Length: 324
Length: 272
Image 1 (cartoon, one colour):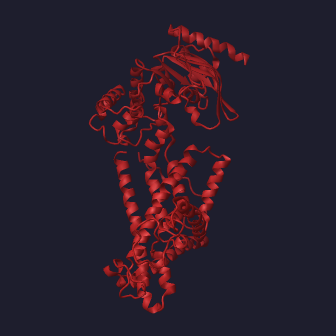
Image 2 (cartoon, helix red, strand yellow; image 1 turned 180 degrees about the vertical axis):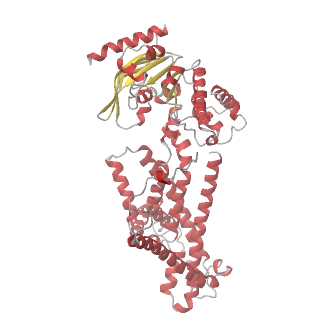
Image 3 (tube, one colour; image 1 turned 30 degrees about the horizontal axis):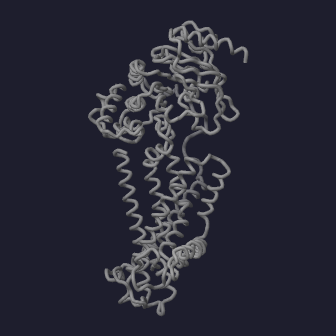
């Protein structure tokens, strides 16, 4: 027998009903076009921004430029350099990371593992963290000045009986701490998310074997959450590297003849130097090439710091996948 | 609840008679459990014999898993759980205020429904509980890992890849690894919460064989949805319905000649 039924057996469609496309759906077309255009716009802005900086900055970039400590008059394109700014920005980002990661991770562990879910206190802490993320960065700068320098720094000087202000003045430590406070919500939220993603079954397995909560967190939960925590660190580094406002009152110097050598030293900073070059220059046309070059260096440094963090995270992930 | 009093007395006599063993290992007395306002377990009294397999059966939501998790106090982890009554293991009331929950869980191991090996090597999974207890000596650990894996009928399959990730094992192997991990700390009791429900029939058969092996050394309490499984592996069976213990006794009796109509309806598949 022929397995294909005769056409007569196929249930006929209703007259006038067919599956060909109906009339042109204007709104579907309009909306998909709109989303595409919006994406294109973002890409175009990014391309113009990066293109402009690279085209104008690259020719002015030289080994001399990135390896020279400039004289006080750093507006001269022929002799100036940005070595102290590269070092200053790098140091403040590293010191910030050292503070923000442990504090943020421990806070997130408290919130996800220990705090009673949905208690008033927990909700207040979460609201505080979220609000912290919304505070303008200049406010963090003022907070750093008031709290770290005027309160902690001055009292520290008094306690240590320093003859003059050592800690009670802007310093790389205070700038880094101010940035750490600013980026704390980023680390807390990223860590919380990665802790929440660890399956309950793994925690239960550990506890059922007679592990304490602390042992379970240290041996099972945290190793698994490490890549997520590092993502938080990467986001914090990205945010902090280019920030200028929080360090304005807390540690950045307009000019220093030597590199910072202690945490109580002030420092020069790439972002702030961009601001100085573009507003304080006696001859803006003459300074423009080094301004572009400085912006390019800032961009490259931010990418480099991110890249290092991403490399470390990739290694951790690989190790986790291979064993644990 | 006067209407409940009678069957419960019968339950205890039935189990004691079947065992011929005067002192049961686990003695649950008038246990009630509340999640906030909702009562999940209602005044349950049950004795569990040593070195036999006891199956908890009943429809979903009847409280059998909740009761199982009372036996190693895993319910402590859930906010808003309140427990009344007592659970004795040997001589100790495990809900007494001076009980060390960590110590309890070392004596009462657990295997979960969904296999949950740590994302570590096979070796590190099995050694986890021992390392927690402070065992550092490598030859001690090696011996315990081999013994546990042999005990879980997994040694021959994994002995050449002990230091590869446990996540590379098949589902059935992962569950047997979880059993090896649980028995590595030498508990007296092993609780199993539907340990084969996510496995295919072949893997299920292997786990069932393993359970029959394990009862020589351990007291096993298993929650199962699978009626045939209960008849195949358990010596005693307790049937739960809506948070109450309806009937308990030797498995053969529960399945062939139950006292209660609801038990009969359930084991014959008329509801559930």
